[in-house]
Image (cartoon, rainbow, N blue to C red; front, side, top):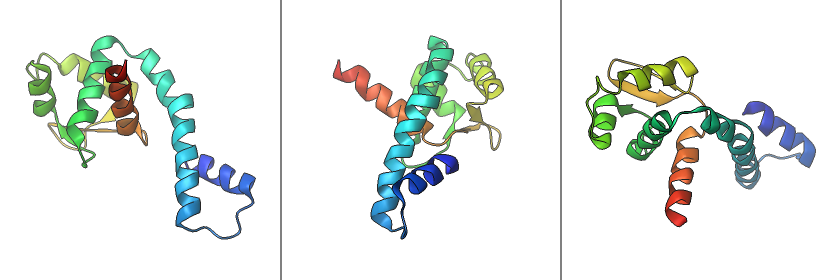
Length: 124
């Protein structure tokens, strides 16, 4: 992410970094992350793992953390029924568990990516 920001600022020849520049560069960096990182990850995930990640994103709201029990409840399953899915996502490096019963995404803008994927599914 930092490399994307720096490269774009260099390409633009920016002399003064203000809020407008940050916003433009952030949008560019997000688009690059979505196409070059997140879409590749999505293709690697099974349907169940993708659904877990989408459910995580949906439940996070303004927060970047969600409980595994909230995910399980939303998916209509028990936390133990989803433990292998969660473990696979942890091993894949897409999520982390900062403390017992909580999960976060490890890659910047993953929540926004999955929320966008959900809205694209509903737009069709």
